[in-house]
Length: 89
Image (cartoon, rainbow, N blue to C red; front, side, top):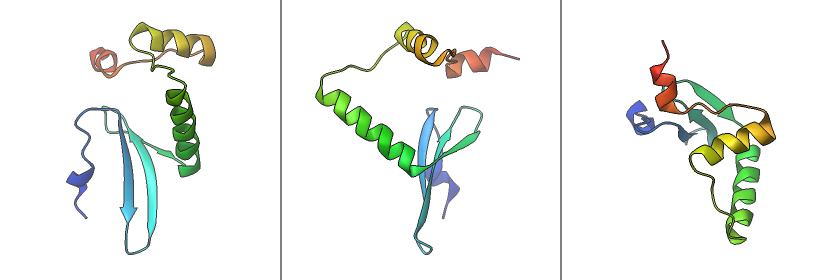
């Protein structure tokens, strides 16, 4: 299987990597530096179900500063965008 199939041209990327002969898969999130974080499928499925329910209720995705506000208020965290990460040395 070619690794180019899983290239991340616009990070962050979500990869579902499949080994068909073994009938196994894994889900990964890749950042701009190529770091991979494994995410168990049950968590992805739960998040997708929550997103689907929100979209049916016409709840819109946060954009720009709204994302940072949500992260700060509910996660007590700061979100770094890929462009901010690239500016650090």
